[in-house]
Every structure is written in structure tokens, then in C-alpha cells.
Amino acid sequence: MRLQRFLAQAGIASRRKAEELIAAGSVRVNGSIVRELGTVVDETHDRVEYGGRVLALAATHAYYVLHKPYGVMTTMRDPEGRPTVADALRKAGIKRRVVPVGRLDYDTAGVLLLTDDGDLAHVLTHPRYGVEKTYRATIRGRLSPEHVKALREGVRLDDGTAAPAGLHVISTSRMNVVVDITIHEGKNRQVRRMFETLGHRVEALTRLRFGPVALGDLTAGAVRAATEKEVRELQAVRRTAETVHGE
Image 1 (cartoon, rainbow, N blue to C red):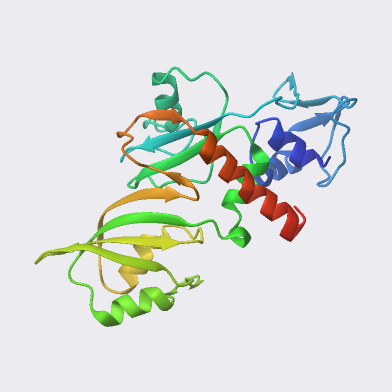
Image 2 (spheres, helix red, strand yellow):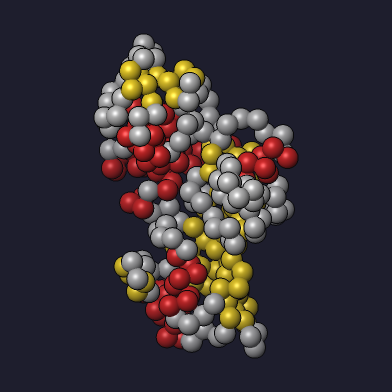
């Protein structure tokens, strides 16, 4: 097993973050610092250490769903002392070490998956797998037919053209429009920038669905365990990635 995958499966970080830890010299194998990405370790016989402790692969993984409120950081700690998702886990009495899958911006609310299954986190956040995310956005102004067409065909952003989005208008008023928009990329602040490019400010944004996991009626700040059905569907996403892409 590659070292970065071992770290991910041990619940330390995603595979991409694990690569950063290895390159920084933060990981030891059998007492020696290892910086070479792709180093192969034997999960049974090799001694892997990080942060002064010996790591072991989790026998089973944990999956939690959080309704991240507005004004909460999608991190486990914040140097500025702002509320984080770790605070929500503590309030819910969850002691298992899990980390967020991807991120939601400070000013975005909604469904957030947390797990110690680093392999799954890698698949769910990697752009190549196209995991769908649906958001409910309240935007300033009225959407013209031309703007709806542009969103559905792909809006040009400063870091490349966004892939076509699914768009469904929920309600309209004199000042605002409420829409559900589905994307399968993970560009920084993508939904906000897509609308801003068309001259519309996003006034509120909530993620309703991440892959097979839906927000449902989970209240802001609440945490629940993923259902068996959700876990099965999440694992199916990973199996597809392994079959199609050889992950």
C-alpha cells in the first residue's frame, strides 16, 4: 500500500494532504523520515508514525453528516478563534477523529460529510469523478433567459470555463430569485462566481446535497450518522472510481 493511502486510511488526512505531510518530512516509517511520494509500506509489518504516535488502519470507518451553519469554518481548528466544524462535533458528543470531505465557505451553509475514510474522501473531492453537489442560492435581481442558458451551457470564469450546471428556478420576486443549481466541479467559490460573472450577487447559499447525501430536515449545527443507504451509495462511488480509473 502506498504511504499516502495508508495515512488516508488511518484517518490522518485526505490523500492529497497526506502527500503534503510526507513531502514536509512529517512521517516516519520504521523510525526513518520518508519524503518520497509513492513509498510502499506493509500495513501489517511496517511501523508508520505521525505526530509522535504509531498509526494503524481503522477496522471500520465512521461517516457523519453535519448541517454546517453560516459563519463556521470548515476546519478542525482556526487560528483566529472562529467557530469550526470540530466545535459542532464536540457539542454532539462525537469523539471519533474525522475530518471534513472538501469544504464549504465560511459564508455558505449546508450539508457537509465528515469521515476517517481517506480513500473515499479522495474520490469524493477529486474533480475527475464529477460528484454532484446541489445548492440553493438566493440571488439579487432577475435571471434573464440568456443567463439561464449561459449557466446551463457553461459560464466563463477567470480560471477557466465552468462545466454546464443544472438549474431549476424555485421562486421569483421583484428583487430576488431563488434557484437550485447542481455542479460537479470544485472550483473555489464556484457558484458565487458563476452568478457574479453574470452580474448577480449571491445573497444566501446553502448546499442541499453532496453526492448521495442530502441535507433533509437536519437543523443548522446538528450532526447525524450517515444512514446505511448513504454509506452503501458512497461506497458505490468509490467502487466505480476503482473500476473505471484504477484508483
